[in-house]
Amino acid sequence: MCDFIRKHGHANIGFATGSTPLGVYKYLIESYQKGKVSFQNIQAFNLDEYVGLKPGHPRSFASAMKKDLFSHIDIRLESIHVLDGSQQDMDQECQRYESLIKNNPIDIQILGIGMDGHIAYNEPGSPLDGMCHVVDLHQESIESSLDYGFDNIQDVPRQGVTQGIGTIMKAHQLIMMAKGQKKAKLVEKMIYGEVTSDFPSSVIQNHDHVLVCLDQGAASQLKEEDYERY
Ligand code: GLP
Image (cartoon, rainbow, N blue to C red; front, side):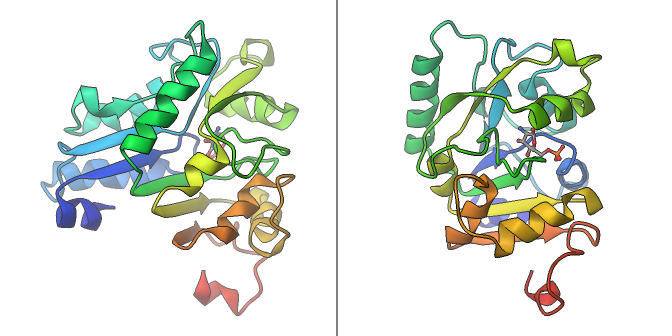
């Protein structure tokens, strides 16, 4: 990512929340602090958000990205783009975000995998060519949200708003990250399984430029010969 920014002078980058990319964000902050990279000319696009939370809400994904990355680097405030889950007309908000991305194609998109195989908040059953949309969160996603600072499950919003799988697949480069043994079976299915909307992350098999970054736990179900390949 740093190489790309240095080479091109600018970049449109899609950022994922969740625990997995935190090490990457720490690395980006350190690289900035050491003067190795500047984010002044990047445009940032968040992947997804909770419906019903204002971007400034402490549990919103917008706040999480600010806390974990944006407030520590020299990105311009006006270059941070988020889906606003507090808008009255969410269809209009989704259209706004979709055309913003259409006009500013994403160069590098960071992705994680949810415990039901979702990417961003595209839950199982989401169309593989879908655009930004509102989604009813599945139980696994609601429960996983307890890791993101909600005190109890009643406080977790029941809907999310997300870039669609079609939106994500238009990014030039995908970086899919997974960490820990609990993701091993999901990673195996994502890489070897059928490409199906029932398991949304499997769609990355159809992308021409995808880098899969795994730790040992998450990679433990891969066939041995694939360790090197992935
Ligand atoms: C969350 C987010 C995704 C994220 C994924 C994995 O619910 N909606 O954007 O990539 O699930 O999260 P984690 O990295 O915490 O496992």
